[in-house]
Image 1 (cartoon, rainbow, N blue to C red):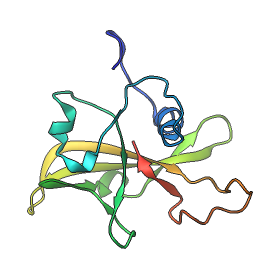
Image 2 (image 1 turned 90 degrees about the horizontal axis):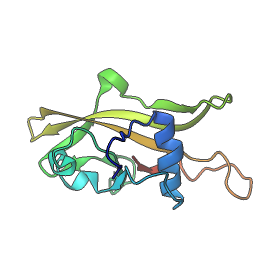
Image 3 (image 1 turned 180 degrees about the vertical axis):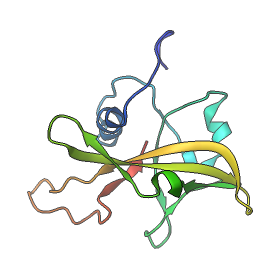
Image 4 (image 1 turned 135 degrees about the vertical axis):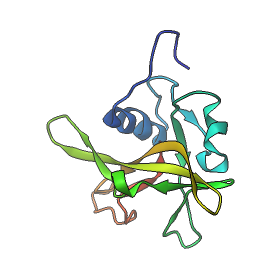
Length: 151
């Protein structure tokens, strides 16, 4: 974790560029403030360990058809907050080019079949797929234009 007195308050761009992108490409991270965890194998309070906020790397799970993301976690499910950001919000690199480097979605955790809201909220970040592969050809391998990993 971070040394005493330090607080981890990254911007959306910093999370995508300096953490998620580096993690996916197995590059060194600036610090160890983001943990690897299977966010969807347990309920939020088990992940937080008493903390108010935490950051995790995880891999999205898809349905057997590969068309839908599965966000069930034990007795509950993470659902997109359509009132906030049901559609992804572009995370833009502010280096002057205004290039979209990733996407952000906002989700809430609901318990049981009746979908009782728990108050747990998560921001999910995904990377944009590069528009061209290493050979210079247009990248068609990722139809939703994102890598299957998130923070």
